Amino acid sequence: MERKRHALRDMTTGPVSGHLLGFAFPLLAGSLLQQLYNMVDSWVVGQYVSESALAAVGIGFPVVFMFTSLFMGMSNGTTVVIAQYYGAGKMDRVRDVVDTTYTFFVLSVIPLTALALLIIEPLMALMRVQPDAISDTRLYLLICCGGLIGTIGYNTNAGILQGLGNSRASLLFLAISAVMNIVLDLVSVLMFHMGVAGVAIATIVAQFASWVFGIFYINRLYTEFAIHPFCMRMDKELLRKIMGIGLPAGLQMATVSIGMIAVMSQVNVYGTSYAAGYNVGHKLDNTGFLPVQSLATAATAFVGQNVGAKREDRVRRGVFLSLLYAVIWCAIIMAVLYPARFLAAGLFTSSEGAIEGAALMLQCILPFYPLFAIQYTMCNIMRGAGESVVPMAVVMLSNVFFRVPGVYLFAHFFGPRYMYYGFGLGWIFGATVTVLYFLSGRWKRRGSLAE
Image (cartoon, rainbow, N blue to C red; front, side):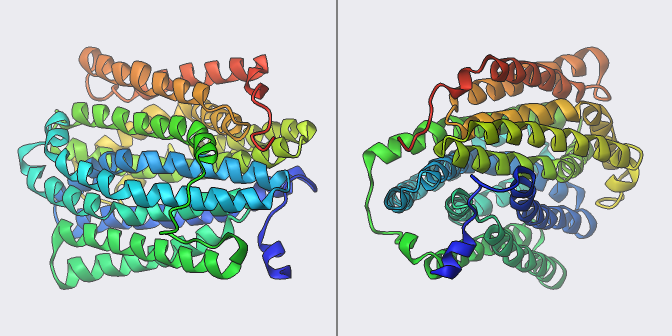
């Protein structure tokens, strides 16, 4: 029992900064590992397969992300509800949340996979994939969408563990997945010459292994919250609470992916080299922003537990520190990555067109990073307090009604060199609205979900 208590993180007492950073660092290390094997995918196909394969991996990312968004949102909802029940000391309800979450997962994953496979062709047409990249893109998407269960399962486990205050386990799972993915990438491409299919197979096998290992870990360390995938126990009231947080969060993430698909459609107009450059720039962008994502996730769990324990003073302190650390990191990454953007892009490909495309993307978006950090962190803080509709609306408006039109307008009037300034337009709107709404105090109106 002592071992189990040690694995939980009670964030309602003790130093606020220590809890935020202590929770965020394992998440960051895990995210870096995840990003590492995503970058290895791009590096392997960029160096040893072809430019069209590199473009296919980049085109495939927002499509796969769109289909996993609902369950990533459910994972977020699970984290918040478990955190608030745990903060309130209601362990029996934590048990019920675990069963409800997994029952929903089991009942939903097969229909979602079937849907993903059915609409690959229409999505490729929507994104205006160039003829020389169609074959690789189709193959990559068919394999990755067919293996969605591993990615979704991993995120379900992560949501449970993060609600309990355990972010280190996710690092362990991702370490296993990253090592497997890198080894399988190199073996399938360099030894068996499987091309983009080998990269896709390596990804889904590694993610499936990470999910299964996560179940064994949770069942061994948390016997009172053990996962029984086919228990078919669903508490409708708890599902409503999880969906109340998770559905808006999932729709928010789906909106992000839809925005990415719309941007990708414009990027593809300029050819395969430019699409490959967008893939490289997007990978570097994701890597640079990972610390902010980790801090924001830590803030969600921290705020959730302290709202459940009715510690408003700690909530306010956590908000201030989360924003401070996020903005400081953005200043650091801008100072490092901006002058090195051509060099960083050259690590993935020798194509001059792709390198220039990636560098242009970074040149346009990096100056707006602090605004994106504020928007992202504030949305996660409000979600931890049970307010999920406003963050969803902000992200939808920022990504669809400001970023996408901005990208198209900049491309139309100024050309591809300036199109990515549309990202900054969306972030200006998002940061402004989230700060004003937060200052209004209306995000606190829901109180504790555990009451």
